[in-house]
Image (cartoon, rainbow, N blue to C red):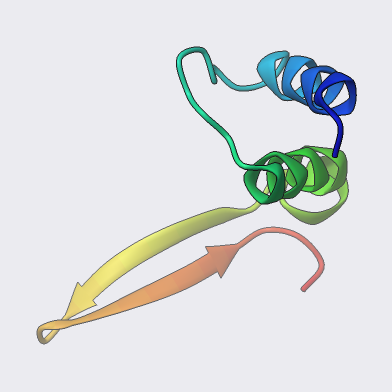
Length: 66
């Protein structure tokens, strides 16, 4: 990824997340960019709650179509 492409991607990520002072590898920037692109379709409206039952932690996903 060239530096101009990475700058545009970092600016896009910065619109949603505070990444000031953070060094991102190309892979990290790409991952976060893809996550933000897919957020509304994949993650929005879903809550993951963690429960501790008899010393074992369980995650329960609420909301969405899944």
